[in-house]
Image (cartoon, rainbow, N blue to C red; front, top):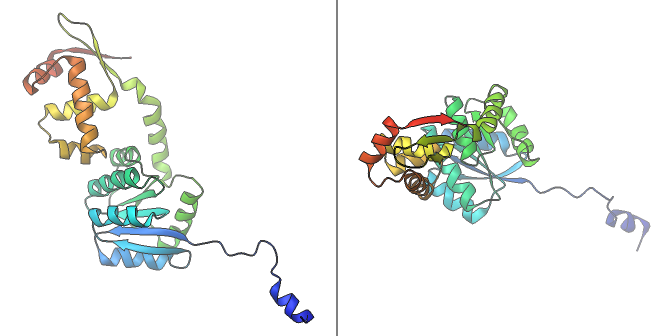
Length: 234
């Protein structure tokens, strides 16, 4: 073996190329998917899905590192993020929205998303967003960080204690209260799940637990309690 052969066969330590990040682009519109792909193609291996069901199937099958979700209205995207993070827990979900909304942002975080960004984000920033997510960082607008901190601090403080006539007091968690309040308004299980970014099974579980704590079986009984029971915060 010549000296040249030896030199060409020896590679410096640490020069092995890192594998590209695997990104699933889930969006209604072809132009959106193409735009995100073009922005990421130099640093990521991209696949695409054109609706929530297809996105879930692709996430379970391909196990991407990150799923960028842009479905309209945003509730569909948040619901998709909840399903994907539940069925493919190794995948980080980033929700894009046409209108940044604080309540919607909180719902996205509750659904398991690690990112919530305006769909009009500069494409040049997308590779940096993916990199930050891969480092375990959250990708959210700075203006919403304070809202997230407030949400985390106040979660337990929003537990509701109901004093019921002739019965012991009943304490509901914030999520049980949210679900029962929507049930009382006649909102369907599916609509509640989409609004709160949780599964229908979880909605039914919170509703059942909350009703059991309150000792009610019908919506009429629930409405009377919600309307007439004294409540206080811890």
